[in-house]
Length: 341
Picture (cartoon, rainbow, N blue to C red):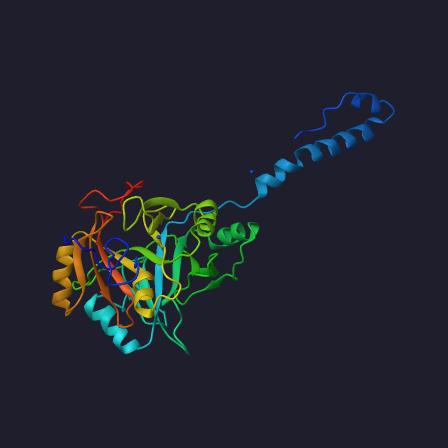
């Protein structure tokens, strides 16, 4: 391990500027006296009325929508300026196949990672957006229940539609405007990984966050995401904040303390996604066989995991990292289970 870390949340360095952070019922005396002059029928009706008033708050609470499970990351979509070059990177260098049931019917360039996860590319139209991470899609067994839950909590959510594979979905934005989607998943599609595929699982997606408290109110307090790990360039610092989906092992990562005027290269480092492997050193050899001539690492980072960074033609970072740590992490201990291959 080198003494000067390189350019991602776990191995960041000087190459980039700070690259890589809520009754009572009617029990009054004298109620019986008030009903002495009533007929038995009137008394019964009045009693039913009072009982209805008493139980109304409980009925309203019982009918409030609950949050369905959020089981993982279903897909990530990235903007690309040159689809031909990006196709070559994701199919040849990373080794993903597009001719699978996971991508069946998808019109965007699509690459299956496994039977429930995929990577999509989208052509940039007009000027390049600040973030080339176009969308993160989360899996849930019921998009209708998820949408009702969000609407009940005053979160704007788009209409439910079907994607090209027939899966139900809807879109929304988090408090800082990051585009999200919920996709209905109840099972995995049949899938056989290609021999030259570098990884068979998306582990996480990360993006620049300016106000972590506001984001936490959404992701943790409302959606139930839970802390996985956090750390910084210095012991006790906080530059990366990782939170797992509430009902799975995959996570998102806040990239904190990023300059407002970060250039394209630095934004590409920060707005990224990660692939899981058993051994990053073996993954490096695999990438070389696939034709990769340049990537950073492997190196054990501040999170204690061995990983490497490789960049697509638009400089979006793809982090290839071990499922489990090699060393103890800096700063803070892991607080949730590690993902499994």
